[in-house]
Each structure stands twice: as structure tokens, then as C-alpha cells.
Length: 611
Image (cartoon, rainbow, N blue to C red):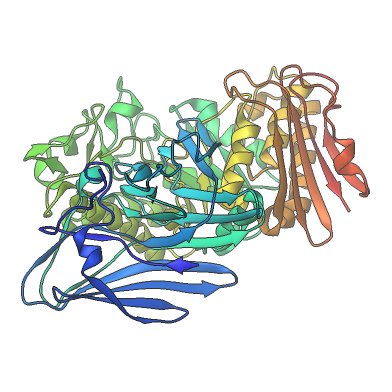
């Protein structure tokens, strides 16, 4: 691959060919930067203005890790307004693949011919063609995943790229003539109000990106996902089943409800019992409006949470708890501690009624040590669910630009998560941001698992679960299987089999489920433990889905994941999707075991273990 750089230094001319306002690429700063050294791992450039840029592209098992280091060797301050984490020149491609993402609709692939995007060169080669996209704010997976794949349909080659960035980011394709350049990194000054002052003798390193080549979209995504290196807690290595009581109590947990659930789960393959939101709420106040003070509700838990944890552990389960550490709500006392909260233009930054702790402020991290870490340690929690339900947007005060303030804030939040793991090394941490708004690699590498979505009881759950195979490890993708006492057998099968596409997470009033149906749940968890190595180590070779409308899916979905001579086939039918073409995937295989409904009607689910 032809790796290069893109950058824009304040004061240098913007590029021509009608690019200004669309992109900061191809600026005078690039023209001033001369390549002086290149090998298999890096390319060094020296500017006539006295700074050095080193673009790293380090290959490991066919995947390149890319990032850029800017060193100011001049005797004056340099203000960067754009710098790429990766830049690949001379790309021959005709199709662009992106992963869209909205709340409860994560990971839908959008594939477009470059001609559909009006990207073909002009008759004279004049006038830049650009397709630029990204995300602005502290939810890096909102509207788009930080991912792109470029396909050459003539050669069958795919180039795939993932950005590791928890704040605003961008990816852009541009050309004047054949072929393409694709670059990306932090959102620039035009797109994300980011600039960075680099003092003489100082340097700046960009977020990293991973780049891979393969002969299919599934393969290039698999290479990128397998290149992620998450810090998995030792207790979570074998992919145990989770129970989260959110869809049981809906923010109203009680000792009685938790104990009834624990009794039902005792002796099963379910390892975690996680208490979700509401454990701190005050009398006659909603859980959503009281986030931030983190005082245990004496009405719900008069003796505190230590007896609750002890009770859960007495049933052989690991207790978990929900926090939304970085945000504060209007009925909390800390909401008015504005000198420790994010501001923009000197005004407290309020979004949907919530505000944000400034994670760069040591007062805030010390506060969270007292409120979060101490409670986890004192009570004996082994599982922490970290939620995040609002977005900072373009940025905050405290740096030379709003975007740089956001970058610093986002990294400080990640560093605090790392500090929790240092203090409590056996803790399992779940990454949740209204479901999937933080499913980007740099955050996923800190956590054991993540909420794949806030799709709790939707018919689209298996579709979303399959989508995110392309973006994160299925072994980290926690999928809701909400069970109700009045569910018929087919609904139970549909929910449980969707969980086989990642980490199975149960919820609902399981203590009221009839014994016959509960026996199916236990059978599912036993089967799940058997196929866990395929989920953990396999390759998803097939995602065949006919549904276009996730709110009203039609047809069917077939997912095949293979590992070490065995395969897991997961099939779901939607409206009008009865009798999907399963036989072509069973052909040549032996069915070792299966679980689920016959696929002869709408909204059925079935899994097969194949050899």
C-alpha cells in the first residue's frame, strides 16, 4: 500500500480545485513536507518550516497499525488544524462500504458505487471529488462507525480501515484523477473545531488506525476485529452468561426481586447478576433525574449494598452494578458544582437536561474514587456496567479549541476506566453508551464486553447482533434475551438463539417463567457453553440477511461462524420468511446438535452446531 500523510498547519494555504470548505486536505503544509526516509514501518517527512512528520505503518499478521507523530523542531508555536492518522494513496476502488449506526439500529452496512456518489473524475481532471464523513462528539459510534472499506470489484480486493478514536473523527475519500486517496483521523478544524498548539520541542501523536486487505468484506472485517486487543478479565475468558435485571425492574431494583432472581439462577451456567439503574434514586424521584450523587437509596436498600452483594454471592453468582459516571442529572447535588463540570464559552454544558463531569479535573476523579471505586471494593462487586447517555457535541472549554477540549476529556475518561482496572484487576467492565454508541476499538480494548445495542425486545435483535460482528469481537458483544412469563415457546427460542450471535444476556421476570419454559432456558445456556469457543475464536463467513426495514423486518437471516472444524449456524425468520434456504449451508456438514423452533413460520429462531 502507498502510505502517505495529510496535514494542515494554520497560516498555510488551503488546497485548490474548489476543496476549501469541503476538506483541509492537499494544503500548502503537505506541499512543504518532503519525504526523507521510508521503510516497511514508517515514512519520515521534513517541512521547510522546521517540523517533522513521521507516519507509522507497522504490519502484524497482515494488518497495519497506522498513526502519525508531529514534532515541532522550529523555534515558534505551530498550530495544527488537521493531521491524518492514516493516509493511503493510489487506491483503485469502485465501491464504498460504511457501517451506519443509530440508537437501537447499530451496524447496518451501506454500500455505494463511487459513481452513485458522483466521485468519478471530471473530463479535464479539474475539481476535487470528495466524500467525507465522521462523527462529532463524545459518542464515536453515532450515525457512523469509525470504519470504511473500499472494494475493487474487478480484482475482488477490499481495503478495510478502523479508527481507534473515542472523540470526534473523520474519514475522507478524494480524487482529481484516478486513483483515490483515503485518509482519516481526528475531526479537523472545519469539521470538528479541532486544532492543537505544538510548542517548540514538543510533539503530538494521533489516534491509531488499523488497515487490512482481503478478498471479501467479511474477511477484511474479521482481520480488523481480530487485530483488536481487549483487556479481558480472567473471570470472563470462558464467555459466561449474564443476567441483567434492567428489563425486570426498569430502574426499580429491590432486594426481594434480586433474591428471587438469584434463587432462579442458582446452579445454572449464568455467572453474573447485574443490578442496573435506580439503586440510588430518592423517594418520589425518577432514576434518570438523580444520576450523579451515587448515594445508595435507603428506601430500597436500608442496610446498604453490602448485604445485597453477599446475598448474590451466596447463590454462587457474581454481583454487578450500573453507573453512569461521567454524566450528572438535574436533581443531583453535583449538578450545581459547575466549576467541576464541562462548559462551553464559559457556560455549563447542558444536553437534554444532563451535564458532564470534567474528567480532566482531579477533583472529579477523586470524587468518583470515593463514590464508585470504594463502593465496588467495600461491597464486593465483580462487575461494573458503565453507561453514557448524552453527547458533549463539538467540544468544551479548557484547551486551545473546543475539539481539543473534547479529545482531552474523552481520553481522560478512558484513563479513568483504566485506573479502575488497576485498582480492581479482577473486575469485569461492560462498555455501554445508550447501547452501542461507544463500540469503537480504543474503548473496547479497555473493557471485557459491551452492550451491543439498547434493542431489548425488538424483532431486529438478531440483525443488529450479526451486524456488529464486523465491528467488534462477538465474544464482547452482549445481546439482550428478555424473557417474559407469558412468552410462547417460539418467542423464547427467538430471543435465546439471537444471543448465540454474541454474549448471551438474559433479563425479565425469570422467577415467574413456567418450569417447562425455564428448562428450555437452562438447556440453551448449557448449549451456549459448548459453542462458546466458536463465538470466541471463529470467523463469520456468512451473514445473509434479506431484511431492509429493521422496524418491520421481512424474510430471513442466516449467519455461519466457523472454527477448528466446527461451525455455528444461526437462523432467524422474519415476516414472510418461513423455510429459509438452510440446506445449502448444512450441505457437507453433520448436525451435532440443534436448538430452537422449526423454521416453518414467521419469527422463529434456530441454532445448529455442525461438524
